[in-house]
Image (cartoon, rainbow, N blue to C red; front, side):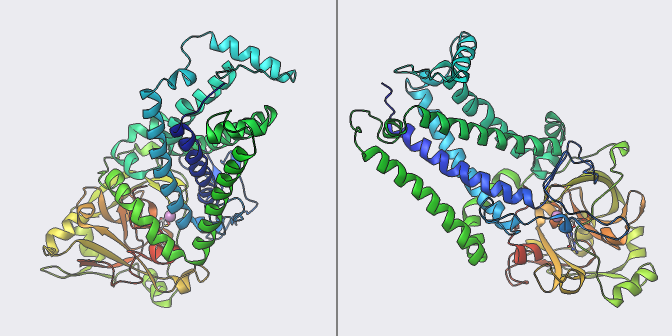
Length: 493
Ligand SMILES: Nc1nc2c(c(=O)[nH]1)N[C@H]1C(S)=C(S)[C@@H](COP(=O)(O)O)O[C@H]1N2
Ligand SMILES: [Mo]
């Protein structure tokens, strides 16, 4: 008979806990852009999978926010259009799952247990085929003391093929990694192909789960449960194994219910608690990448989605009519020389252009060329004081009038730290694809921080303030979406 050591049973349990959290929070993330593509332009209509019936109007402005779906809390964590919180749970569960995996693989290597899992001869392939045929003719295959070849192959693939691929494709969705190492994206055939594969791996995990469960039941639930939970068949002839096993499952269900309920009821609390654990990790892994992107002009997307509607007030409309002739950018806060610069003057400063891939937190991407002045130039001219640690970018769009249903008051804003501000590809763009920046994309000025998610790149920028801390601004989370949609200020993944 198989005996399972304690570490194996514990990691098996944790694996179920974290994978189930990953699946539900992953579906939440998918609901924010319920379309999958093989191309990184995400041209509307080119998706191979769409999980929404919504259609966008052909002749008026629509934004990627209009494409969002609301998934039920029964399948998504937490459900009901909560991308920010879904991501917090996804990253928290990621950390837990990776630690569990590390422990599991280490123990596997350190004990004879690996022999049970890792095939050592090609004979496993015909063996597995043989077992599959007998299962298909409804004959169970029982191999006392070890896994049958099909089981072994399936378990081995889940641990050493599916899991590493899920990690690798997840990493490919980090704009920080894609900006520092564009070759990494190409390994998967692009960001959207990696995103599609990540979803297909979710399907593979679910399929494995269903078959695995069916087999456990087919082979006699009670004795298997006793083995899995207590590790010893002799100990567990009675109901004890079943009780402990069902207790563990009930624990997982309770965790899901608490996570869902607290996220919907106390989103700020959950944002802070999960970020306290995941942000330091995310900063270390994704916070430092310098963008070295330079796509070819032939790679520029014919279509570039919009997210965030233009300011709705009369003053902005008047400014667009006079092509921003009276527009002035203010640079102030902790600087030696506050600046008040017109657009015409900015255009006389050294110009930077770059062709880069934009990655929205919701999931879509697109490539464009951007021209403007570097933040480095603005910092050289304004001279931030040593106490300045962040640059805050204030926008002209008051969300309560430009997108009244978007869930928050006040003008859009965002922050980046000084190190990110001094990257060569951090620019204030006044041109897109060689033309004056269109109104929908942020005229007259928008930030580009090419190693970060799209929500960092404030459009309609009218003022830059250098500060020591952003906690006194807005609701204190570092930006409008951080304040009202519970995103993290760390936007490298
Ligand atoms: N002022 C302002 N800037 C903004 C937003 C916004 O709503 N208002 N949305 C952000 C988000 S979430 C994204 S993905 C990008 C989208 O840029 P685009 O509209 O040019 O595609 O702008 C970012 N900058
Ligand atoms: Mo976005």
